Image 1 (cartoon, rainbow, N blue to C red):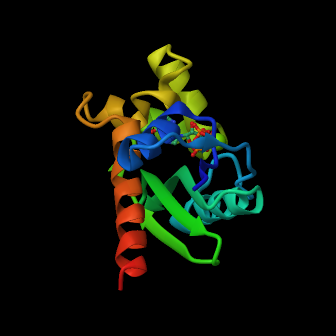
Image 2 (cartoon, protein in one colour):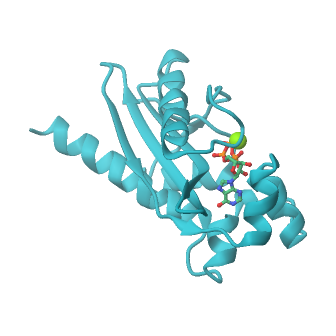
Length: 166
Ligand SMILES: O=P(O)(O)OP(=O)(O)OP(=O)(O)OC[C@H]1O[C@@H](n2cnc3c(O)ncnc32)[C@H](O)[C@@H]1O
Ligand SMILES: [Mg+2]
């Protein structure tokens, strides 16, 4: 069975490999949304598009993981979504943990800068998006980006197995 993840970001690949305990293929697929999704709906759609594109590119199971931001009551939150697609056209979704972003991060993102770039200059680490991520930095290292994606992958794969076995 060919399992793919629609990204070359090591945090996303590692999350799928750790949960499924299998080697997965990375696929360069379009998310079909903006590089910086700005709502739960847009972030979820990016995840679904990536998962479906893996199937179009020949995978049996395709994972799409997407990071974004969403605004509620004047606060900008980090938001994350995942989707799992199969060859039968089944698509499952799950959302990840959310935390508010501090003002010095939220302001440049609202002005149009990508969160990954803002985090890179804030931490002086251009690889931050592939490791701790914003979630790791602002939880003081308690929850890294790959671990947060692992929770999403568990919810996706768990739902997939539940509905397969019913
Ligand atoms: O190569 P892809 O798979 O696109 O990986 P990415 O790091 O660009 O990740 P996303 O497209 O899913 O996320 C959209 C933007 O939000 C950024 N982002 C989202 N969550 C983040 C986090 O926890 N830490 C740092 N940047 C994050 C990300 O780097 C992008 O600029
Ligand atoms: Mg991206």
